[in-house]
Image 1: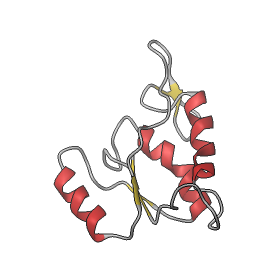
Image 2 (image 1 turned 30 degrees about the vertical axis):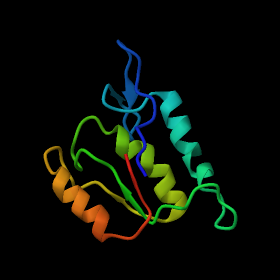
Image 3 (image 1 turned 135 degrees about the vertical axis):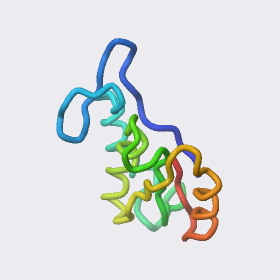
Image 4 (image 1 turned 180 degrees about the vertical axis):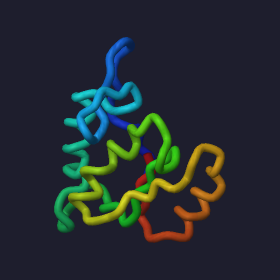
Length: 110
């Protein structure tokens, strides 16, 4: 499954990083609230409208800016007890695809 990151700040505005510091590469407040609700799409294991992800991948790499995909998936990772794999930097798309295909399914990529 593929999803875009949650809302980024509007032009001229900044989001906040995980420590609460202003950061134009982070999610806007609305995006953080949306990320907090993402787990509802997968619901309880009985009767969920979508299959629960067994693997989560945030594109861009662990030190990339912007951090929006990691921030989008972090609350879902906590709710599902599934780590976010963020080791695939820009340019490593082939490695990312191999990891997704070799890993548990279903996978969710941001």
